[in-house]
Length: 209
Ligand SMILES: N[C@@H](CCC(=O)N[C@@H](CS)C(=O)NCC(=O)O)C(=O)O
Image (cartoon, rainbow, N blue to C red; front, side):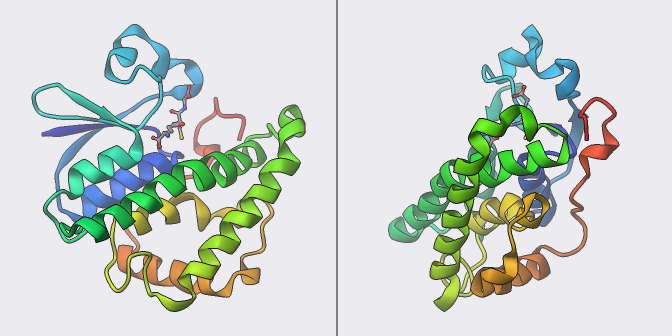
């Protein structure tokens, strides 16, 4: 059985949880207390030298880090990752976009906001806000004429991009300014279903949230 090394408030972990669930893949969940340093022990750094969750550990003990690499591994051969070369490259386009324009921008701002870290990161906040607005505008532009990021089919690109972007109001963005984005987020939410809650940082007394 797979093991998912996870931290419940992490939306990167959420991506993996969603796809494992949609694919009906049973797995063990191992919760890593990241604010107590559990992702920086020697044992954990063997799994992921970057010291971060999520990590998917396979039956033979080998490990895959980076949420979007985990999605790609799990989705291989399923309806969530097209085999066609062009469409597959388009999925990759959005996975890379997410790692540059969504997670370290909206994800970071949201993390700082919800865990009381805005003040100490003050020097970066204005830049992230501008970048986040550009990200949402880019998504809104793209999603005006397509139901999902890659046409009619829901793929891992939608899971990855949705994870942090749909929570952008947690850090002060107004999603009603982005109607096509909002309509897409509704379609993604309905496709994923109700079984994958977003966990508050408040469940972890060590998070500061
Ligand atoms: N790009 C990575 C980011 C992983 C990441 O930053 N994980 C956070 C939780 S959301 C973490 O484990 N942080 C602990 C640390 O960096 O010490 C991914 O997409 O998986």
